[in-house]
Each structure stands twice: as structure tokens, then as C-alpha cells.
Image (tube, each protein chain N blue to C red):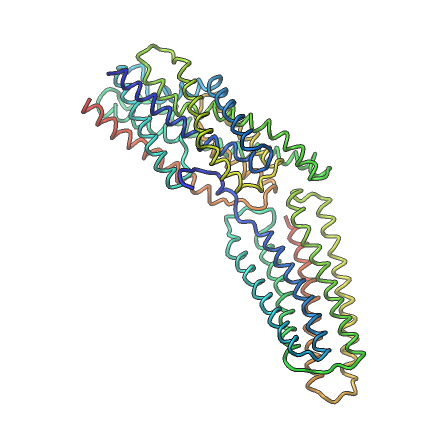
Amino acid sequence: MIVIVAVLTIAIGFYMAWNIGANDAANSMATSYGSGALTLKQIIIIASILEFTGAVLYGKKVTHTIAKGIVPIDSLAPHIVALGALAAILSASIWITIATYYHLPVSTTHSIVGAMVGFGIASVSQNYLTIGDIKWDVLYRIVMSWILSPIVGAILAFLLFTIIKITIIDRYNVNRVERVFRYLQILTASYMAFAHGSNDVANATGPMTAALRFLGNEAPTWVLLIGGIGIAVGIATWGWRVIETVGNRITELTPSRGFSAEFATATTVLFASSVGMPISTTHTLVGSVIGVGLAGGLASVDLTILKRIIASWLLTVPVAAGITMAVYTMMVVFA
Amino acid sequence: MKFVRSVTDVFGYSPFEDLHRHAELCGNAVEKLIEQFQASVDGDFEKVKSLEKEIDSMEYQADKIKHEIRGNVTKSLLMPVDRQDLLQFLKVQDSIIDNTEHVAHMIAYREFSVDGEIRELMLNLLRKIEETVREYERLVDHMKKLIATSFSKKEIKDAIGHVPVVEELEHQCDKIQIEIHRRIFNSKQDNFLELILLNEIVVKLGEIANSAARSADSFRSMILGR
């Protein structure tokens, strides 16, 4: 029974990883396509390899946070944890699929965190845990990291672009500068893919790890491999369309601007991964683009997206938690 | 495309391309105005009428662009220039083509004859106005590069270097205009209606050049007021 639940969790986790590759990874990489730094084929190859590498080499900490940071799964029976993880990944996937259909700028990270909270609350209602057992302090830190990451992205991008402007753009012919940055953007695109893989893979592998709790205390490394492969497959099978669509619409992000935004985003995300904080790469990228805009690097930035992002936070966490509570309760009652 | 979550919404509407198209319409309308006056001098009133229509439709296009810009430049946009400065600039630039259209209608009010010397001066004035507006267009042309360099000092200097040139050309227009007025009021011709119309036309022509100079000034304020 527990094996079936774990296998189902892995299967849905693979779908989640695919979805992350298809949408979020694609968005992160589209800036390099929009500026003409890389061809679609090159982007898909770079993104697949480096998302995978980032996930496998650097994805462990965030995975740990999602798996056991919020709900203390070690004090629960393994079969309860497995059901909870399945409910969480299923609910987050359902919500992400619905939201994507309606073009809502939701984050897979927020969905999975909300879902894990839902699992925690549901197990409180069934007296497996007390309300104080849920690690609210970790949740608080995660929420703070969601607020801080776009701001940090914006500040880094602002500073970076300002430095580039004063030291390079002001001194040399702008066309030549952009040509050089086209090459540099190959590096930041790789950096971005690595950072993104290291953070977002956990949205798939966190619940997978929790479901496999019955195998022992340590998360098996092959879980990260599955997550990495899922993301790579997502980029190759669907993400390329998203890269094309998004890239063609953001051509005003010239290589020097794209470089600044990507570098700032990747640095913020990689730092978050190193301290085990699950953050939204897409929201951080939006922050970074605004930072470049604040530095005078863009013709026009529309700040209404901030309202939509905040609304999507406020919506995603309770909705994902709510669906999880319902799904989990049904599973426990019927299983 | 369905099943996409994307970051594209962060990129807002950029008014600068539309502003440039609007400025180009201003220059092209003045060019047509010269043709129209020449047709009037040649006594080809059919052509005068058809050019009036053409200039009128150019003004209508410019108006559409103006409304497009005003409707899209919302407060939520973060642009490298101040929103109010931009809208003020647009308003002044629009008066260039408004005045041009006004003159086009006046030339088409009736057939009239202009004596040789005044006619030459009128053509001089029109050519000078075109030169002024074209120089003004060169200034506005800099917007693209200003954005590409994110308003580098050198680019700003190059751009605002056009402003005194526009002002100087406008001053030369003034001088020709004064000369024409003097001749009109000392004219031996006794068709007062024609003289009044001619005088009105010259006043309005002066306003085209004035608008170009004021618009150049607004442009400078806009890029320096960042």
C-alpha cells in the first residue's frame, strides 16, 4: 500500500517537475532568446543540462525544507506521511494546472508550500499532531524570503545595471557593448538555469522525499535525478514553445539589460538555495527587471504586475492548502 | 497560447515609437503644405483642395496616435522620463500639426493671387518652416538612442545640441514673417479680403515654427528632468 502511494507521488512529482521545466524554466531562459544571445536549440540544450545539474548538485537543501521543514514528518507514521505527500503534490499540481490555464502568475513554490501547510493542518485536525508541532517559524522565514527575494533581485539588478551603464555604456559605442554582452549572456543564462534547477526542483522532490520517508532518514539521491530529468523533459517537450512566445515579446530586454536581470536573479535564487529557502524564480526575475527599469534601462515597465503577484500569493497558499486538506482527508477516510 | 505562465506582463507599453511616428507626421504635413501653397500660386485649385484633404487626414492620424499614447501611458508605468513631462511634450508637439492643418484649410478657403515679391517671401518662409520642423525631427530621432544608452551624458548632449538650432531657425522664420507683414500692410493691392486672409495665413505659419521651438524646449525639459 505505502509503495503504491509512494510510486503515485513520484509519478505526480515527475509531472510537477515537467511543469516547472515547461513554464518556469522556460520563462527564466526566455530573456536570452529575446535578446538574440542564443538560438532556441542552444537554449534548450543549455537549460536542460544546467537545470539538471543544479537540481542534482544543489537541490538537496530546499528539498529538505519542503519535505520536513514545515511538517515534522519524523513524528508521524510513515504511511500517514506518504498519504500527506501524495495529497500535497496532487493538490499543488491541480492548482498549478488550473492557474496556468488562466494565465495567473502563480508560483509552483507557493503552491507546494501552501499544500504542505494544508497537510500539516489536516493532520492536526485528525489529532496526529498539535497545532504547535507545525514549524511556524520556518514557514515565517519562507514567507519572508518570498517578500525579500524580488526586492533583493531588484536591488542587485539596479546596482549591476547602474555600474554597467557608468563604466561601459557611457564610454563605448552602445552597439558594440551589446554585442559583447550577447556573449556574456550565455554565461548568465547557464547560471540562471543552474540556480533555477537548484531551487525549483524541490517543489517536485520535496513531497517525493517525504513519501519515501519509510525507506529511511536520508533522502535518496535518485529523487533529485528524477526531478532533474522531469525539468529537462519539460523544457524539451513544451518549454521551447514558451521560450519562443515569451522571448519574442520581450525583445526590448537587450543583452546588457538581460545580463543584469539574469545575473541578479540567479544570484538571489542560488543564495536562497544555499540557505534552503524555497522561493519563486519567476517573481525574483520580475523584481530584477523592475530593478533594471528603475536604473533607467528600459523604455517602460508596468508595475501593475506587482498587484497581480501579491494577489497570487494571497490566493495560492490558502487555495493549495485547502485542496490538500480536502484531498488528504478523503484519502485517510477511504484508505 | 494556453498553459503558459509568463513574465511578459512586466514589460509595459512604450510610447516612444508612437511619439516618433507622430513627429514624422508633423514634418510630412509641412512638406505637403508647401506643395499646397505652390498649387495655389499656380492656380490649380483642384490640387489645393486635394492636398487640404491629405493634410487633414494626416492630422487625424496624428490625433489617433496622440489618443493611443494618452490612453496607454498610465500611472503604473515606470518610464525613464517623467509621465507628466511626456504628456506635456506630446501636447506641444501635437500643436505643430494642428497649426499646419489650420493653414491648409485657410489656403483652401478661396482662390487668391499673391504678388511676386510677397509670393517669393511666402515660399521662403514655408521652406524655412520645413527646415525648422525637420531639424526638430532630428532632435526627436535621438529618443531611440537615448533609451539604448539609458540616457548617457554624451547622447543627451548630442540630442539637446539640436535645440538651439531649432530656436535659431525659428528666429529666422520670425524675421521673414515680419518682412511679409510689412509688405502686406504697405501693399498697393486693394483686395482687402485677400490681404486679410494672407495676413492670417502668415500669422498661423509663424505659429507652426513657434510650436516646433516650444516642442523642442519641452523635449529638452523632459530628458533633463529625469
